[in-house]
Amino acid sequence: MKKRIVIFRFADAVRLKDAEESLLLALLAAEGLYGRSRVRLETGYFMDRRKRACAIKACNEVGRDVARIFAGFCVREFGEDAFEIERVCGASAARKEKHS
Image 1 (cartoon, rainbow, N blue to C red):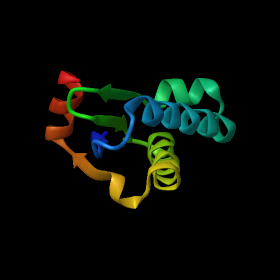
Image 2: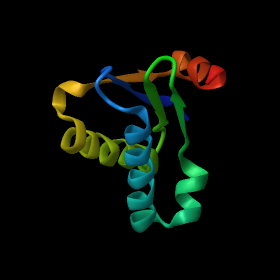
Image 3: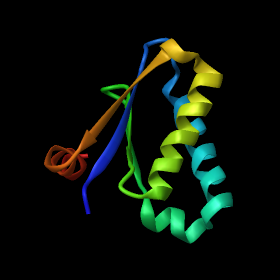
């Protein structure tokens, strides 16, 4: 399966604690769609406070939906200019995931 990671990079104005709480809400919303076990088994995330970034494993439908929900929450809470999104696919995603 091809590795896919979605990386959210936050502006200095965004409190990372607030971003992490939004991510937890996105995971909870995904549990409503897929069930808790499936969300826990099929996706993962890593918050890098030093880089002001959050990486979400999005190699399947569950992970992609978590990333979509999180993006929607971030737009509503912080504004469209408060973060950037990068999609990493293939071998480079596998390396990034391994080091995270």
